[in-house]
Length: 106
Image (cartoon, rainbow, N blue to C red):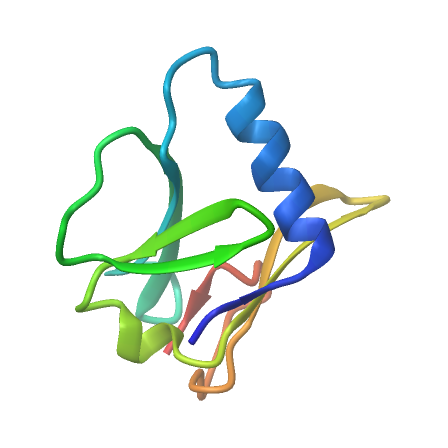
């Protein structure tokens, strides 16, 4: 399944608290596109699909649709900040190739 680091949990929690609306959690999915063939998509969600897979850590809920799960299995999601900026990173053991931005893979 998907793992979230402490940094990712804190970042998602802050995003939910700052949303200003009722939010159920974070959706992570994979779509066709990006420079390597597939791309990660993320966003806060207020409505959940009953077929979604739920991953929960320390009260933070992450929803993954069934079609994306095989592409994300074993992935660790982190939130890092550095000189180039801050953002989520994906350490995906199923990816055979990825682009330099870290948001696209195959």
